[in-house]
Amino acid sequence: MEPAGYRIETRTRASAVLALVAGAVVLVFAALPAFAGRGLIEDLIFVFYMLALAQCWNLLAGYAGLVSVGQQAFVGLGGYMLFALTTGAGADPIAAVALAGLIAALFAVPTALVVFRLRGPYFAVGSWVVAEVYRLVFAQFKQLGGGTGTSLPPSATNGIFGIEWVKAMLEVRAPAARDIITYWIALALAAGAPLLVYLVLRSRYGLALFAIRDSETTAESAGVDSFRAKLGIYVLVAGATGMIGALIYLQKARISPDAAFSVLDWSAYVIFVVIIGGVGTIEGPIIGVIVFYALQRYLADFGTWYLILLGALAILTMLFAPKGIWGYVAQRYHIALFPLRRRLVRS
Image 1: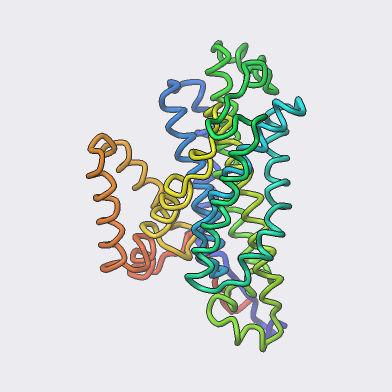
Image 2 (image 1 turned 45 degrees about the vertical axis):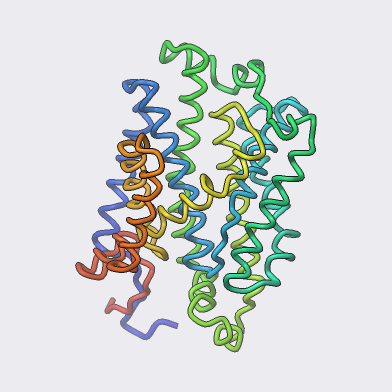
């Protein structure tokens, strides 16, 4: 209970301003397809789904203490479910994206029962091994292209819900209209991911996660069911990751086991984004994805040197700013755009 004359607050003036600015920015981004070229739209889709993936991984590792190197299992699973539902069951691609997330969440339950037997680095390695098992399994399905992969038929990509409306409103062809619809879904996921993380962490469930992250033994002695809390977050993140994976391969319109279950693309890069921005902060992945996009855009042509530079930047960040870019800024200037601490103030 709150003491008489006091109340518990989490919101700050900076967070209130951020809410207004964020709403305006989302509206601007939503209207952008009416003015921007297709190249910029495709770049922003990449930024949006990387941000959503980073927020999901950060919730899992930064707050629940589950450092996974196997989230590509659910990216690939979501992508393959999109193809199975659209080509096999005739589902609309947008509905298939949502269903792919639900299926990924269902698959996460038996997966968790396996990997949760492991701790620390063994959990990280075990999650990667599970992802490799998924890759090998899906490579056996000839109906989905086997080891070489398959493409979405034009009837599926051109029949997406709302495509005729977008073509008429913006006067674009079917491929560009499909990218615009994908862009809007990616924007919704990118905006929804930080909000979801914030709401989870502001709840009683979030308090349990903080306690588990700091000391699982102490949390359990205080009555926290650590297995149930971790399982809930693992399933939630798997479902969101599955939806993002389905969206990624809706845009690409082609999938293969090696690409869908790539540890580099869907785990290593995501971990890099979170480490650079700041693990255990909602703001960190936003900063990290901007840095990552800039590096990839301007340095990717350097081949191997690009990966060396990414690794060097990650090492330097961990040495001189172990809490990431945003962690350093927040600690130095006492800024919290997504405040999670509860403060007792006079009414």
